[in-house]
Image (cartoon, rainbow, N blue to C red):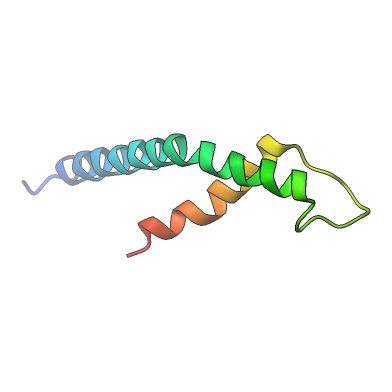
Length: 74
């Protein structure tokens, strides 16, 4: 129990579990964020008239990657 490998192994497994959870949550919510991006595009909400345009996939990915991490803050 006193060796460092035991604790490192447990931490590694915990990290892998959290990564898997994160990927599953992204996979489940990405269609929702994509739908919102499509709706915003159709209604032209929140997009400036000029400037660089992002793809709908990129907008959905950005929305997912900025909002989902809040679920893991505890």
